[in-house]
Image 1 (tube, rainbow, N blue to C red):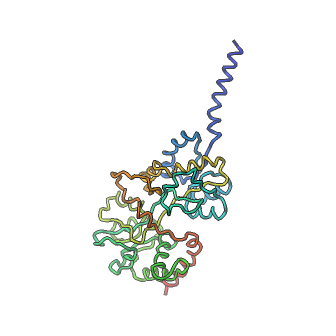
Image 2: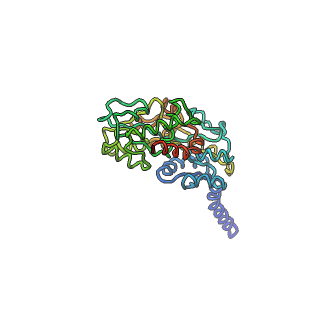
Image 3: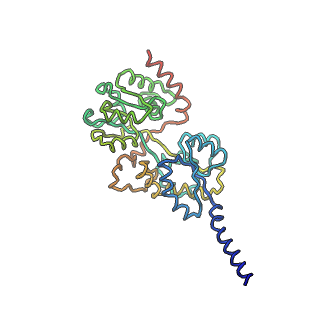
Length: 341
């Protein structure tokens, strides 16, 4: 009897330890920025954990931390900014994404596949906002910012920010130049500064929102998240358009590190990120547009139009990020010289 009882106790003890041990055998380390992004991640992670029998361990930090921890082998799946994804590619940190293990890649917009190592997880964009009381006809082009009618009523981001740098490249292309021949773009930006149209080129988005609220700003670029903020604050006379040249994307990218402890589970997680249910969660909770084309946004979702979709997604204007990063200080110095004369 004692022997049987001991055996039962041992079996029970083994049973107690078996479940945690199984969970510990498969842990997937995924980077996130915390805050609302992590909350959405957590809201959808349980289904993945149950299906794959694998626990998600969130690696929380700022974007540069994600790259450092990827280098140190402390990450399996890196959710990051495109610039950090590009940096990781140059360093050889990422594993090639296997389309046979990530079938949802087949649903991605073609411009959401950056390379064999990097895809876009979700996207926001910078649109052209305008005061309908002051700007009677909806703008169709970014060129509207230069119109004399809007003297001292235009707002853009500071020149060191990606949307304004992207606008500079766009203007270079429209005026006979390119990212490698930026002078026509700098000439246009200098003309904008000298026109007196700018009420500000700002670093703090809350200030941009305030300028639209007070009606000092009639026209300007604005991230869709800030546009949502304006609408929630009751700004009924502020609308937005996506100009014919396209809008400037705000991208969340995803990679699998070569240091991934369980590459198959990492591939499965990337596939899950690209599933309609996860894409929809980020769209409705965070206002980050799906990068796959098989997601249906509910018709009654109040901010549906703020999500860049369909043909608008295909017209996202994304100049070479490495060249922008490498040249932005030089471009800014040149623009300062041009506008100080």
